[in-house]
Length: 77
Image 1 (cartoon, rainbow, N blue to C red):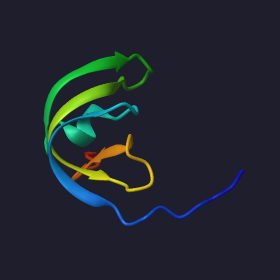
Image 2 (cartoon, one colour):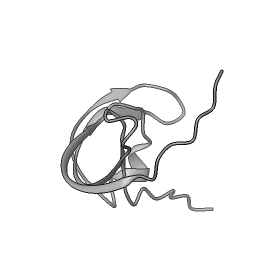
Image 3 (cartoon, one colour):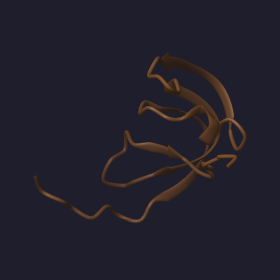
Image 4 (cartoon, rainbow, N blue to C red):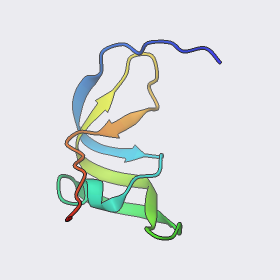
């Protein structure tokens, strides 16, 4: 395996699709989630192929990788 440092991410805004699995609680309160596929994975289902309206990070090196900005881990303890 080769580890390579990514270029600095560029912040863009608009409608985008994040193909990677996400915890819905991490994105639902900070972004407008428009559609998604559910990945049934107990104890918490994940969402993938998520179409989101909002800001996202995009890297020069990997155009297909779009990561939502302002994801927030929520846990009541």
